[in-house]
Image 1 (spheres, helix red, strand yellow):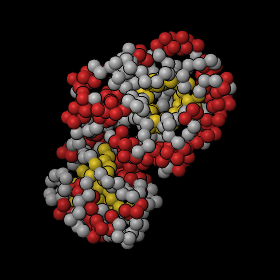
Image 2 (cartoon, one colour):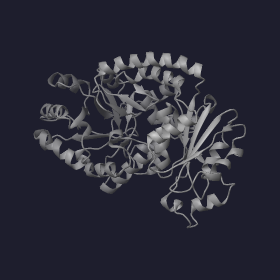
Image 3 (cartoon, one colour):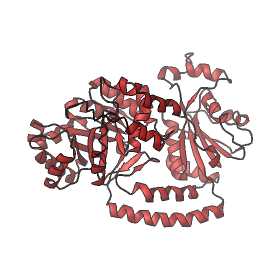
Image 4 (tube, helix red, strand yellow):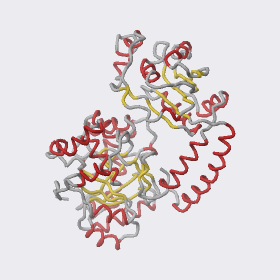
Length: 482
């Protein structure tokens, strides 16, 4: 998420695209295959090495996520817990949440897993029995503090008949990226150059265009030059402990966007959860806000207070919470903080067409984001395109209508019928509807299961007809005063 000059991004993209055209021809000559890195990681160790491999190979990556996540109690060795019981029974097949969308396109699968009682976790058996591996090359690796890969590799072969199994390798938790690269090279697994060409085409068409959602990376490029996730977590009304636990759950589930504010009273909890996470700081995007009144009157102090409370080095995005006296003064202070590197991007919350027309001529930096109330009963179909046409990304709060209205929205017959047709929840339909309109979503939740669910938005797509059905629900019914 490093800031870059947009013109340079475009220039480098053209160069990269041309290079990949040449690489694609070389890939065909060398017989390079489409590669998928698959991994199961209960504690994060295997994930790190799998991510190294995917990056080295320019491969797609898929995480095996259990429908029932493993707890610390489940994983405690020799306690008779869940993992112990599963490993004692070779017939156990733990259920997997989600699936590989197009396994047929992959010729090579790099398969990573931890060692549990000398064997691969039984969920690896579930995965292997879920697809046809005929003709595919499978290169396994395991992570372990001491045990080698041993019979865990051979024991899997019968579960993927017809696969070409290569010799596996065991790696320790502190294995470096360079060691993984050497191992892959020794096994003749080379970067998927044909996949690189396709990726670069997508990047040249989408990722370098500010404001255009990239549904492959789940990000949007802001006009400030930074990338921001397009779905995350809102922390409004969450207490200190609830906020810490919710942010932790989000980061563990793969979410990287967090929205807080001075008025929420939980900036410190957000910062503590970010610091306590194993996720690198640069992968996390934190939004906070200044509130009218004392903070607008003394914005330099308010900005420093936010930096101190969060204590995460810098603020990815700071917004003005809503219009008020001294809002231009406060925004200009945020502009200075951008120049000093304290804040990366700035924007506004609860600004509409009339407010923007008055405000924008008075400031220097165009807002990167405008955050407004948006849900199926209050859609802002005139405001959203106006903001987007200015090169500003739109983010919606209250995507489920806000407290007191969520049950009505979830139970709406149009939304619930669309959800049933796709085998998803009403919440997922509403969030996907937002994304397809180009609206970033930050649903609030203190429930880890709901947080996981709110991120699982890319296994289905709403049709034009379904989008129109939801658009027809607009009542112009605003649920908060902002």
